[in-house]
Amino acid sequence: MKRTYQIIFISALLVIEYLAVTTREIEAVSHSWDKLNHVLAFMVLYVLFSLGFTKLSEKVKIILLLIDALQIELIQYSIPGREFSLLDITADIIGIIFGLISSKLFVRRKGLTKIFE
Image 1 (cartoon, helix red, strand yellow):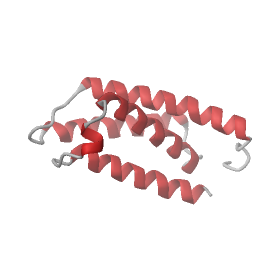
Image 2 (cartoon, one colour):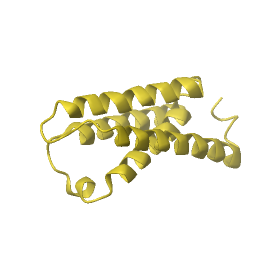
Image 3 (cartoon, helix red, strand yellow):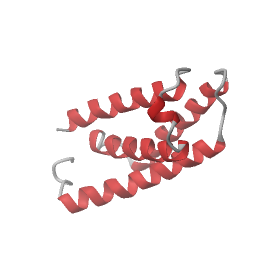
Image 4 (tube, helix red, strand yellow):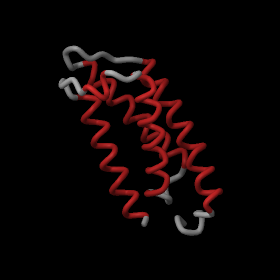
């Protein structure tokens, strides 16, 4: 089961990376509230990261996702029509926090701690 979460995490990460750096306008993304997209994306990433990579500490997962958020913004800075945004990084951080809380609640509530150890 852990392997499945790893594959889903990597797939989600690649999709989010593509959506973040593409110059194409994707209607479903462009017609929604950008900051909510960031919060939801990083919340989901954190939960999948936690389920798939249980041996990594919370601190390492948070740092790696923050690095990802920063690299997305740095790449967007160099893409015409895109820009670097501290508000996007803030929304990513909020998403990571929600993901951390959600993953703790999910694991506790479902009694999944033994499965993922």
